[in-house]
Length: 342
Image 1 (tube, rainbow, N blue to C red):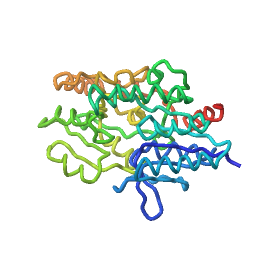
Image 2 (image 1 turned 30 degrees about the vertical axis):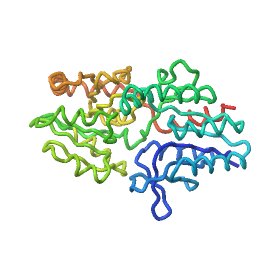
Image 3 (image 1 turned 120 degrees about the horizontal axis):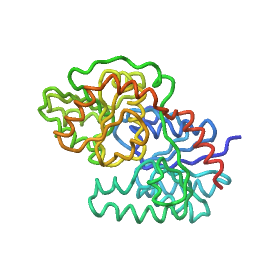
Image 4 (image 1 turned 90 degrees about the horizontal axis):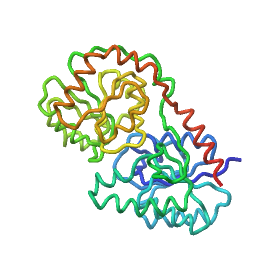
């Protein structure tokens, strides 16, 4: 009999015809992968907006407010013995859940996917890191930690894991492409901390540069479709269609102000599309071939584009040397860490 694993998330989930949907692909694939080993019960926040990715976890619970959320969590804690408790990222919701878990004698496992200090600063300004520091300090003191980057732990003891969505479909031979005009791709949410608005301003009215954005909600498509060289598309649920987006463009851009372990970069590298990031997240480069760091101004950005264009064939050849983590390896290590925590 499978051991129960309760997963708590701050992500918003909508329900339609008895099925559950989210926009964050990681909230779909990570619980689904862990569900092969554990009996997963997923908790999230309720959304009235339609999301893109179906979560194939039958025991999914969504709540309108923190009071209903915590009430159900407390009820579950009281009934279950020997279960494991996994919290995905630190937010006001999950911070409160961690406090209740510890109060009832449970030690949660907290999975840190990104640098909350940077995210809260981008969203709330100077006060953001102070708020996160308070939640981070308490949560880490009462939890077992798993992170995708050592620096995210800020000196705290924890296990390191390499998240990935890559499977045989992503790793098959990519489509060949030439670079005449710059056909840029961004896959992700239209959020301030993601730097997408900065990128839109950077390429505004540039004739030789086009950008496709994949990852918006329906209303955002019309809100940000006023730039002639920009195409805004909704979140893509089909893996094969998403792969085609990568293959149809020649350079991937991730303009985020903060990132931990961005899986879209792995996807771009798997399709051998060079990646441009800005100095804010240059730490993600590591030993990977094909990632270029630009300053957040047009002159330097355009110079980086031209450098990639000039050396495109060589860059793609070097990218073949990358050893990229796979989804199977990611879930296998995650299961091992959860099993080993008391």
